[in-house]
Length: 223
Ligand SMILES: Cc1cc2nc3c(=O)[nH]c(=O)nc-3n(C[C@H](O)[C@H](O)[C@H](O)COP(=O)(O)O)c2cc1C
Image 1 (cartoon, protein in one colour):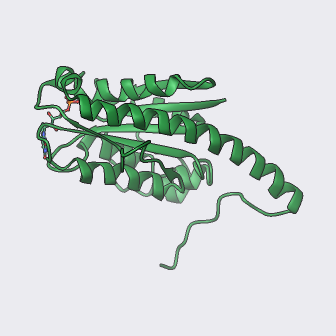
Image 2 (cartoon, rainbow, N blue to C red):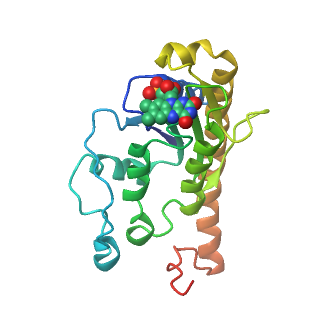
């Protein structure tokens, strides 16, 4: 009924990967949820070089590397759980590159992400090392793409937050409170993905009946 894509922004098989996978497991407990996992680990992902080919030629990113395998997964997903290690109180450079390179979605597939749902996970080596800022960077990606941000259930606030003590997966496992936020996030995104998938379908039908154009709006230019 709804597909959730987990994206891990860590180059290691560490705390972030563990947390994203656990969130997906929690999501799968809701009947009808299917999940897929993708990671930057071991992938070749170049930076956006601001060539503007995407804008001029209305094309997805022309750089041919491992980002290509992510594009279709992103288009097909109903919901997202994106996790990042905290690097310098922000998301990882690798995840930033992924977000930058997915920019053309709004040009090539306008409206495809509209009203889909996303949740965020941040894992920091220290207890208060910038998890909130990293979460916000992920939530900003969703907002920018006309998506709805899900914070998770019952006191999870803006997403899953892990204090890994730089101990990779074991650090996440040992942070029982943090893992609770991660599982609550998985469950919350799963429910929201089902609700929004059903709602988007119904709204498409209703809009057709009422003759309302809900296709992607052309991007603002004079701002
Ligand atoms: C370049 C770099 C910058 C980091 N900056 C921070 C930081 O600002 N705050 C923090 O709490 N931890 C920081 N860390 C530690 C990682 O966030 C932490 O070990 C995290 O759990 C790694 O996730 P992983 O195990 O999934 O790779 C940094 C690590 C690296 C390599």
